[in-house]
Image (cartoon, rainbow, N blue to C red; front, side):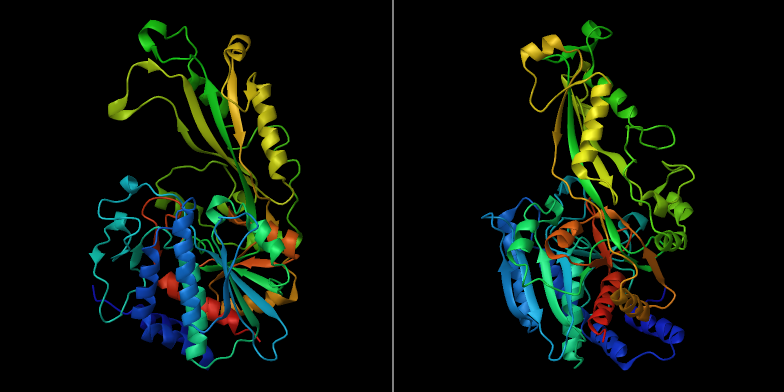
Length: 510
């Protein structure tokens, strides 16, 4: 099949759709075309830096790299914003004050990433050795050398941890600003840049940073660059995010493992006990059965409901893509489902399987529950609803390993450890600046825009509201099949450069 340079194709398709394309937007596209090689080289160097959220020394190296990226582009007041708690990953800050500008945009992305298990990645991949492929690996994509001539195709993928979540966001934002500078285009707003280092750890110290630097971080709007575009491939603007919290569950039985022949049918099996408990939490239609789970949900407004109804339905596409026959909540579309609170099992463990399996009754069984929240939910309240349900199923709940005395008094014992969480957030769709944002994003691809009330994922945006009284809007750029948080994470080349154009369009709002 004949190869085409994606920048050329992209320019042709958009020119046909928009006869009156602006000179400024053409300059941004030309910058991407002319500098693709150096943009990708810097990006892949960034991806070689391990950025696991629990590795503070590694994260500080990432922060130093970002500061270098910002200074190279002439961004002013580049500095680290440190939390009050010593030794925690800083946020990286910089600003561009535009003479005469009366409004300010702050661009947000995060540089930390999820943990990695290299053994789960494809054999030819290493999480922190970026590699270029002609397509998705499981669709026959082939490993390619990075082209010396700097010409890339839109469907090529770069594989590495953080490639899409969320180093692509940082690269898109900073290259957008550089494109404006090199092209002689003056931003319409004052611009500030804020790159967080703890998002994947739940942003435990972000509140300290926001409170400490309140005056520095004032703005008219925060642009959040994180997450994927719509599954239809269309760009999207998202007005809110779900909250998130987790519960670790451990069910106990015998103090030592037992031979399943000698003790089966007699000794309680913690794995079976846990499975029964978990199955009591949802019905056959995917509805959570925990008392009051949905009671405090704030309904969508009429405008938000209208917007949700206009989101393209991708359910059949995704069922085929994912190889599933039916969905959890029958009769509910994917877009509708992510606007409701959810309860998911992130993982379970008890005994051994595969080659290590043995005929035994294990001593314990564990599971991690993930609770996604919407407006109206409080993460502490939602956790307590689950705990109340566990107690209603006859379990003695503790937050420690059980004592011998507790084992003698209770037939069903479970340890529940609640993790800190974040509440949902949603920005009103009727703010005047929002129409400017929509117009800017739409200018990069007319009739290719999805507007969502809420994104399925979670971000700590409620903290921006709480500590800065700030308004936020999320504009994702990554491909929907990027494998974020999992093995074989990747970014589609076309999405990276589309993202740069979107961020530049936002910076040019007058």
